[in-house]
Amino acid sequence: MKLKKKGSIRRKLIIVFTLSYCIVLFANLFLYNNINRSIGTIDQVFKSNAELNDLLEALTAVHGYVYEYLNTKSSESLESYYRSEQEYHALVEGLEGETTDNDMLLMQKNIKNMSQTYLVLLDATVDAKRGRNLEKYNNSYEEASNIYDYISTYINSLNNEKFQYNSEKYGLLLLSLRYLEVISTSFLIVITLVNIVLIIILTRSITDPLMKLTQTAYEVAGGNFQVDLVHVNSSDEVEIVTRAFNNMIVSIHQYIIKTKESMELESKMMERELMMTNHLKDAQLKNLQAQINPHFLFNTLNAGAQLAMLEGADKTCLFIENMANFFRSNMKSFDRDSTIGDEVRLVDSYIYILNVRFSGGINFAREIDESVLEVKVPSLILQPIVENAVNYGIRDIEYSGEIRLCVEQRENHIDIIIRDNGVGLKQGVSEQIMNGTFDRNREAQDAAVTKDSNGIGLNNVIQRLQLYYNQEGLFHIESQGRYQGTTVTIHIPK
Image 1 (tube, rainbow, N blue to C red):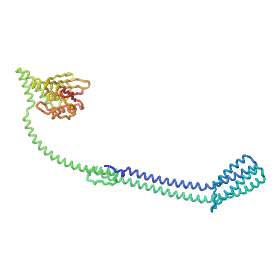
Image 2: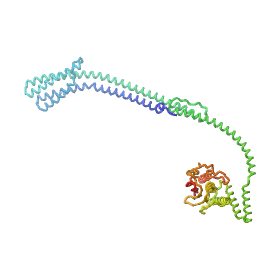
Image 3: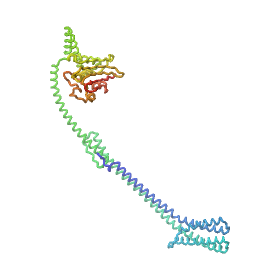
Image 4: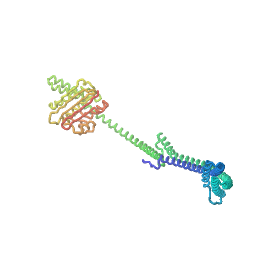
């Protein structure tokens, strides 16, 4: 089930927390901007008073340096005068010079005009002093001193009026800051409440369906599968989980119904099977009575061998003994262990019987390491391989068939090798035989029971080796192609 991206819990959380963050950020920026504006306004309130004070100090310095120069006529005093005059002139240029109805601006205009006249008179006084015109610099200095007094008086008056006006404005600014503080606090409280409400709504939209789901899950865990299905319309992961849970409940309920039906059907089938079993037992008893007792067969063969020996028929005696040994070995249970020596002797008996039947048409050779003959192995693992080599390897070839059995001891295992010079195998058949997928009319895979077969196939041998030693790779078969023979190797772990 594909989740709608717009309704996922992750997206909801991102939206809510991003919205909350943006609101808080906007509130902080709003407060920061208003506080900075208020502080800037407060700074501007008394800036005009500071400028007037600077103007008055510069005026006093200019007049003082002129007076000092007139009394001492030193070059230092003259330089100080020129420097202070430039500073004062710069400050005067910043004053309002336009005609207006505002008293304070009008006073600034008067100060500016008188200052310009004052500076002109001072320059004339200094020039008269430097030209030693005593009468002229006395008159110029006296007139400049009068203007200095007027300018000082105007500056003080303007400063007082500015201070009074700025004090009133400062009080209004403080009041506005208090209102701003109240508004900011209220705004933060509202933002906090809105965030809390958003978080509550979001958490309830997630937890309420989960609580319903949990309650229903507890009932199902208690064995009640008749519960009502949980319905959630949230378009998020909770809805996905809820739908999956509902599907699970429905599936379990249907499974229980099917299981009950299957058990009822199985019960009926068992009743029929019991009835059939009773009939089969009677048939099996009758069939057993018609079978020949294997021990009676062995005893009969042994009796025939003794009779042939008494009559001097040595070949017949040997044939009957090999037949008895072969049948005795084939009747052995797969659950009983054998030895390599027993398996080799069984192969000898089998080859002897075939050579009697087919007038010595099979050339058999063996190379056996006598030291390993008592090693335990699963029963009947060599004779089926030799039988397979005879039936599917050398039986229908036009040249002389040969089978060679070798038992060799290695460092960690024993190799049993059965090699023939028969028709061989096609490419890929050996791999199919080893993994159990080859089927040549069920001849090579499971050695179907024929008149010349004991009913035990290669696949049976491979599986019993794997089960006996609890490992794979013990059986290997290979052939170079058609009429190149076949080699089977069994690795017996020590």
